[in-house]
Amino acid sequence: MMFRILSGALLAVTASAAFAADQTFTGYARELDTGRLLYVESHFVRAAGEVGEQRVVLYRCANGTETFARKELDYGTVREEPQFVLLDGRTGYSEGLRRTPQGLEVFQRASATSAMRRAKVPGNIAIVSDAGFDEFVRRHWAELEAGRTVRFPFMVPSRLDFLTFKVRKHHDQSIEGAPASVIRLNLSGVLGWFLPYIEVSYRKSDRVLMRYKGLTNIRDVAGNNFVAQIDFPARERQTVARVDLAAQKAVPLVKRCSE
Image (cartoon, rainbow, N blue to C red):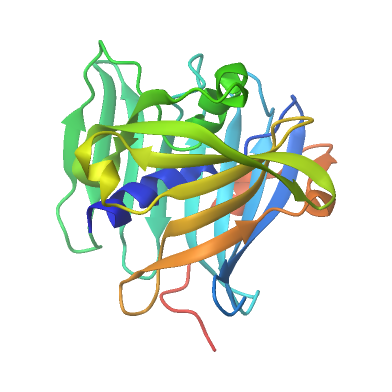
C-alpha cells in the first residue's frame, strides 16, 4: 500500500524535454506480462526547459477516443519543484502542489465527495515534486553515471508530506537503437528493503526519458494501481510552433472508459 502511494507520485518522472521549445510526445502504458495496452499519455509542453514552462498531460483510455484524467504543471525558477494538479474524472481524485504567498502547499482529495486535505511544505527543505524528478536526474547525471547513490526528498501528495528516496544507475541498455542509462529508485532506509523498485531509462545523448517500468499512479476499475511498462517512442516526440494548452485543458473527462 505504501509503495502504491509513492509510485503514484513518482510516475511523474514521465519525461521533460531536453531543450527549450514547444513539444508534444506520447507514452504507451502496457501490461508487463501480456503487453496489453492499458492507457495512453499525451503530453503537451510549452517553452520546455525555460522558466515559466507549462504542460498538460492527458490520460486517454485504451480505446484511444476518450480522456479520463488530466495533469497540469507550471514551472517556476526552481525546476525540481513545479506546481501541479492531477484530476481523475472517473472518481474525482485530485492531488497536487501549489505556490501560495505563504509558500508551497500540498493538497489531496480522495474522491469527488471527499474533503480536500492540505498542508504547508517546510520552507527549509529543497523538495523534488512530480516531473521535477527529470530535472533532478539531469542535475546529478555525472554522479549517477559514476555509479553513486543519490538521496532526495520527494513530495508525496497523498501523504501531505515528503519521503526520502534513493536513486542509482543500475545498468546500460539499448532502447530504439540508442544507448540508455537505466536508473533504479527505492525508498531510502529499512522500508526500501521490502518494497518494489521503479526503473526509469534515459537516453544518454540528451537525457530524455524513454521508458518507465513499475507501479503507476493510474488505477483500474477495481481501484488497484496498474503495474506497467510505459514507452515514449522517439518518433512521436515532436517540436511544434505552439501547443494549444487551453484546448487541452478544455478536453472533457469521462467517468468511465468504454470497451
